[in-house]
Structures are given as structure tokens and as C-alpha cells.
Image (cartoon, rainbow, N blue to C red; front, side, top):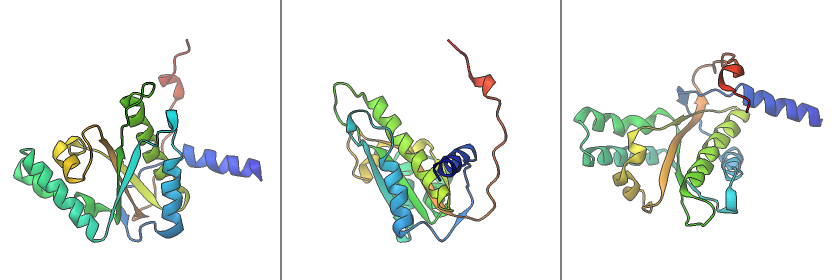
Length: 188
């Protein structure tokens, strides 16, 4: 049994794939709770739990789009960028904005806390995929917009690390191609 579980976990990691074409239904109930719990298990130096997950579905997607568009406009973006920003969250039935909630700590700098929140994104995407859902970790200039941070009620030290779009794949997941690890490895 243990070997089968290990093989399933390894297979999930080796076949991780983003899915940008998502449709309803979105994860909910116990499935969503598993996704959130996976995020909360991210590596966390100092046990600071430096993350917050802002969930948007249904009308919340429209509200998130309005916040994105308003922030883009306040940041001086071109009109077509502002219009597109309003539509971004509508590409999936659930969007989780993942925030690094940076806490002052003598041994854990903000960078490590950002990495921890980033690990939470990947863990949640993997948990979604393990349960039959698809997802894609999106970023972009708006995740750095202080206007957006303010409108979401974030503190000055907080940082959005990504938007995790989740739903049911509207297309089959593509198998990742083999990558020769030797091209990325150098022994010291």
C-alpha cells in the first residue's frame, strides 16, 4: 500500500501540468478544504504561516475583476489593459489570490516568507490536480500594484505571489515533455 501511495505521489509530481482552459464546476466542499490544507502545509521556516488565501467565485469573480480594472486604471494603464483586467478572473470558476503575509522576524526574512507562500500555490495546484481538477498559477504586473493591495485590505509588507485559477479542465491536460535534468545540474 505504501509503495502504491508513493508511486501515485511521484506520478502526480512528474506529470504536473497547468491547465488554462477551465470551466465549472470548481472545487468545493471537502475537495476545496483539501486544497487549502495542502497550501497550509507549505514549507514554513519559523512556523509563521505567512500566507492568506483570498477566494473568489460567482459574483466574487466580477468583484475581483472590478478591483483589477480599477487598480490598472489608477496605475495609469492603457484603456484596453483596464478592460482586459476586468475580464481576467472570469477565465475560471474559482480564483485564489495567494498573499505572502510577511511578519517581522529576526531569522526569517521577507524573501523566505514569499517563497513559502509560493510553495503554498504549488501545493494547492497539485492538490487540485490530484482530485481531478485543473489549475494554472497566473501572475502579471497587477500582483505588484499597491493600489490592488490596498483595495484588498492588504498591509504594506504583504505581497501577492500569484492568482491560482481552478476549475474543471475544458481540455485534456497535456503531458509535460521530458526535460534532461543534466542541463540544469552542476555538482559542486
